[in-house]
Image (cartoon, one colour):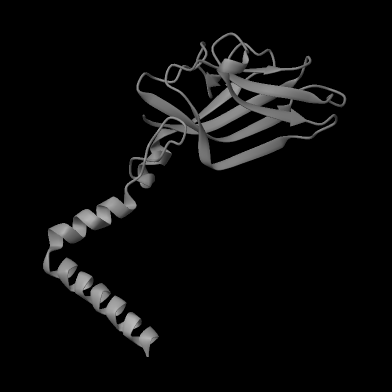
Length: 171
């Protein structure tokens, strides 16, 4: 008996709240907006534009095994730098063997700038010895920040080309 009274009281308040929200559309919109608000930080970037437009901003970068930087593919002559006020969301990384014989095990680092130090590190991958072409996919992407000049380096001499794919979005 006491339990049914509590359910009746809670249900009544819930029904009253729904009726109030339906009668006041501005309040309902404010409540809904607060429930779906997204925090967009550099550590956890969120897509802030129509997803259908992202394919128009898709980029592919070629990082040759000579490790002189990553270039728009096909062809520019200088390493790509993420534009000011933008973030490059990296959605895929491929390793393609360009040499003869079996490749050795190797650690690859994608970093910003010309100095492969930990503070500039964007991502790392380890390929086992003898690895065939390898593809890594990141559906939500991971960020390379504004001003990042993209480079890749390997722990030992390598004949892998690295292909980086992603899209640029506003910060």
